[in-house]
Amino acid sequence: MIAFIGLITVILVSRYLGPEGRGQIGLFMSSVAFLQLFCDFGNSSAIINLSYKHSKRVLWLSSLIWIVFVCLLSFPILLSIDNLPFKWLIPFAALFYSIINLHHLLLMGNQEVHKRNISLLVVPIVLLFGFFVLSQTISINESNYIIALFFALLLSIGLSYSFVKKMLKHNNEIFVFESEILKKGFWVQSAQAVQFLNYRLNFFLVSFFIGNAALGIYNNAVILCEALWILGHSIAQMQHMKILNTHGADNHFSGTHKMAAYNFYGTTVLFLILFLLPVQFWTVLFGPEFYLIPQLFIVLSFGVIAFSISNIINHSLHAADQFKTILLCNSIGLVIGGSSALLLIPNYGIEGAALSWSIGLTASMLVYIIAYVLLNKKVVQWKPYLFSMIIAIIAASLLVYLSNYYMNHQMPNLYLYPIPKLPMLMSVFLISCFGVYFLFVTLFKKLIN
Image 1 (tube, rainbow, N blue to C red):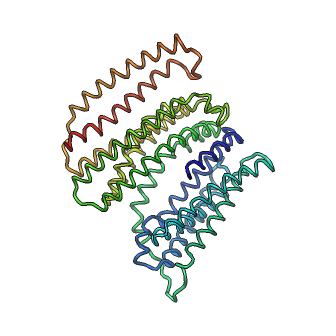
Image 2: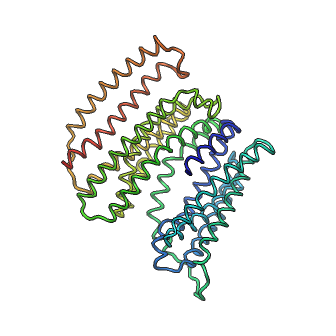
């Protein structure tokens, strides 16, 4: 439901503000999320476990001190950056988001998930209706989104605090800063911070090298692709809990393989549905300036598919407390993806950004597979992979030839992007899908059997 409301908000913002305004909002929200990562070093999921052993009031105050310290420290840095929209408000938004997250963590530790879920709905619902009402009654500009956002955050803080205030009663205890919130959360949050940069580094680079209008188009394409990961997140959480409640490395390995296969198939089918929607659908939905979205889908495709596999392995490693391994895998993907972005974006624009995004996620996926195989001490059989890749390349080449022939002779005006480029990108998509499938699913099936 939250994802659906978020999609409606993206549509409204795109239609009302256009690519330039959508890009400014995307850059603002990415900056807020980036700052919140540092706040979450003292506000991570470790608070859930610590809440069983330590005073919730002490944890709450300790986390608040850290959050406020980070936000205050960010002001001189943010103010020194040019062309950053609403930069004065970024620390306040990060502060409010972090406080809400802190309350949610305490609710999770107290096993009050239903109250957390109610609180989670406040921001997206109020933001959607607030932005719509302000745009209809006052004027259409980016400030409407910011006003609606802060109003929604303040409401969510009030509601979530009403849920946790009974836990925070003063019991005449002496307050001492609880350093465990930093120690326990360091490795977890470090891995999440690097993973965030894998998703969002290109947002900042596109804004810097090309502009906010291009960022608005790229932002929408990436957000739509990431929406497909909802299936994987649900499957991965199920796998995470199953690993924690079962014993035996072989069972864990077999379960991870099955969940990865299910997620791979499901994500691929969902992406194909998304990909097959005509370009007119996106121009009607977002506006005529967003006609490049289908072209970006093709380049983003193998990153989407790669993450469907690495996400499952990530949760398996998380359940096994392999946080350093997760950090290593994400870091390698960030270095490769970031390096390719610096080379591709200045030369190929938002298509280069989409390609480097996929390269980074695919690199992470490969490292995750290698790490997971080594940790489980399995022997990899490469012959099925090599044979399958040859078949995949032949099949992709044949399909590319047929699609090129059909488009040139039967439907020359159907696509807005150049015909010679489409077969190349389609071959990348098909080879990547086949390659990822046979690299992971086929090989692990051989290993387990």
